[in-house]
Image 1: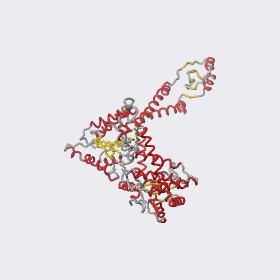
Image 2: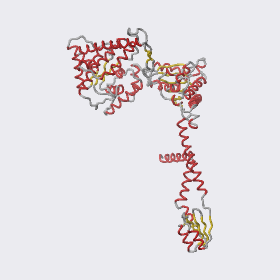
Image 3: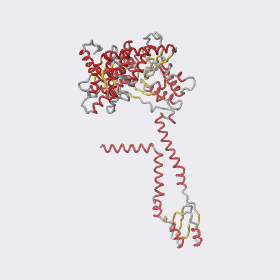
Image 4: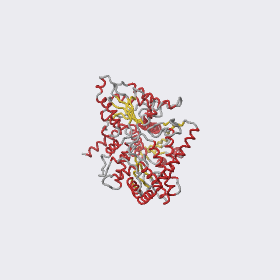
Length: 630
């Protein structure tokens, strides 16, 4: 039964091929027939069956010499000789043979000239075949262009092939960590399900909703969940899909997109990375702007104004750079609302970890709350990656289930880099790294306002790290107090200070630490107003952005800059001496930490705190260990 079905499918494929490529089929068949007729002896066999025989040229001359022919016809490529009994001998003429005519004159045999050119073959090979091949290649190239560029000649015109309506199966229960954002869009779901309820009251649903937030927080997933909950067609297009080299293509695609959405209403249009076409037109200056992008944006603005506010069509868009969008795009009547999809808090991270681990075989020791504490500041995409990395690590070791240790290792791989156990490090460098990381770790545990240490390692990771001290904040922090910033400075200085106190010489390992301490102090002076250098005056204007930093702009005098530099230099020297004093006070604890690192190469945060606590008890010192929440 299956063989018959396969035969039928193959037959249908063949039929489709012939129907879609008639020109190609004609060229192949006609060329093959002519080739067979001219070059395989088929014409000779056909002639030999009648009164016509194809012979060698020498045979023709021999027959003439023996007076066995009574008439000869000479063409440009062939010679034909007719015998007395009615047979016609045909041979291909040998170029440059002038003796044939002399021989005929001697034998007094009549001869004539004939035109033996095959005009059909010449016409076919000189005109039909080249033109047919050209048309075939043009047809193939134009089809590829239509497929890749959206239809029409060189992709200009219709782009309906690019626009496909879907009905996603994603629901709100399939995502976590952005409950506030879900609450904001539930009203849209209700409108799409029951538009008459709102229209009868005269209510106007927002035409557009802009989802903003850092990369990986679930903006696209939220848009799909809205369509899934409302059970309406979902037109998903990336902003970059509208941009082509030809002016007008993007605008045409925008028109097609909205026309298709109108046909399928109620529906949702989702434009991902809308900043690709919605960037502010003022940013390009008065001249030299991108005409294609601007025309596409203008068409989008016109389309969003074009459909009635009661039409059951919602435009959702996502971006992680809302600050670059054109003001006309964000005004009421177009994108009426902005919904922040931010990085999840600890409860959100726990929920996300559970969702992404549904199909993973988990060990009995899994504690998602602890993993969530170790992943502060990570997005949903980062957490999904950690779950997958943990499963891969467990699979590599042929385990039956994924353990807590696998996930901890996965966090380190994602945040710091791959462990380089094979990298050879000189014993002297290993010693420097051990003391350096021990200094960071100890200062972190005895300084109020610092972050909790989760692991100390002298195993190289990533591109450059010869060792690392991993810290975990208690929770997402949106504000930092002055003593917390100073504690961060102390912890960063702890590595270099430990090298000087215990080894008597410093290395280049603290370059990044010093850079970060300087940046912290500059922010305290010029942005947060936490010092007397500039008082409450802001020296550096920070340009916020979801995708990291955004940079600062400076606008202050040279004398104030000198004053700032002097303050930073003096403050760092003061904190450095303070940190060296603490390390000298805990000298034996540092030596114990270094010994443990030499033995195991890694120590956990709990092991670190046990070493410090044991030292304080043995020396009857009041405990300086920072008390943290469980």
